[in-house]
Image 1 (cartoon, rainbow, N blue to C red):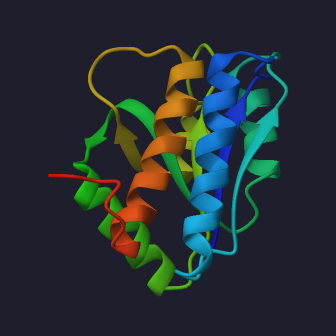
Image 2: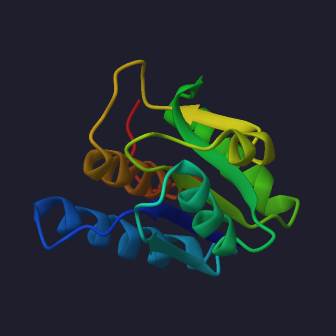
Length: 152
């Protein structure tokens, strides 16, 4: 299984960039023993409107199951999220978490990515959403591995 975080826009060097890199590195290391072949972030260029941005996102997802990060999506507890990732892995699916541009996801992309996950009803800065999904992937894999990182 491959896990991708596909984002519109480029994140410059910053504390958020450092956090995303750290969590992705931790997730990749933890995931190796769980059958996770890679965890990666893919950035696509912003601009040209939602349709163009969505085109760029789809060009980088391959045959992965598409999961939008969207305030209207389903809020999951960390344990639920961990089980979802384990189920996708067990069915042999690669997954791609999609972070749209400033104007969100194009309706065509939303129709292809029927599943959506929310980090709450607030609108979050995209930099923080990247950190949050990277951390939650690491947390989910840590739960699956039986690591003490997650405490209930």
